[in-house]
Length: 203
Image 1 (cartoon, rainbow, N blue to C red):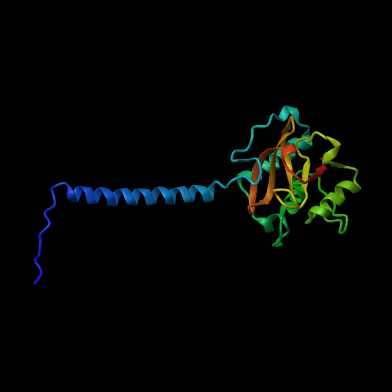
Image 2: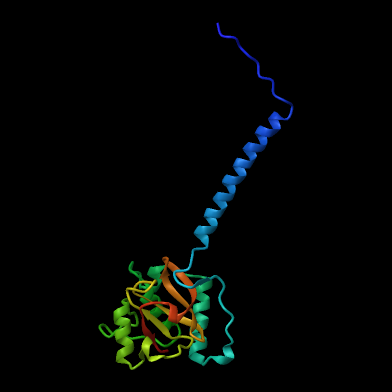
């Protein structure tokens, strides 16, 4: 029969075990909180993700620009989903969002194929701006203004995409767009650092 031994533990052993358990729970909690923060504060697609609507001096804007900014600020504070901006359709909705904002700003677009205010495709959006003499390619060196529309090709970090210029200064823009990680989001970046920007649709 094997000899049984009693292991005597000092008076602090229980506290040591309790401390280790609490430490493990706290560590797991921190990891969980960190994961929640990462889900709620996603990385930028390009440049820097902007979390707060920028203060824009309305005295520098014309009335149409000011209306576009007001619509964008309202939608940033109370965003809808894709079907809201796409007449109930479930589809990639970046161009739908641009179309919807322009209609709400009383400067509606006109789909060159249907005549509708809604232009659901980036290529058709570019076609519209070209047909109205309001498209300028990125290589032209145009300095964008608040309310202009940025158009991206498939090799950009956004892929083929479009969004709206909120602010622009010294080649750095703040944009707001729909269907960015499936949401309405804002980004700030240097135009020169983003590949495959096709050009601008001028307000």
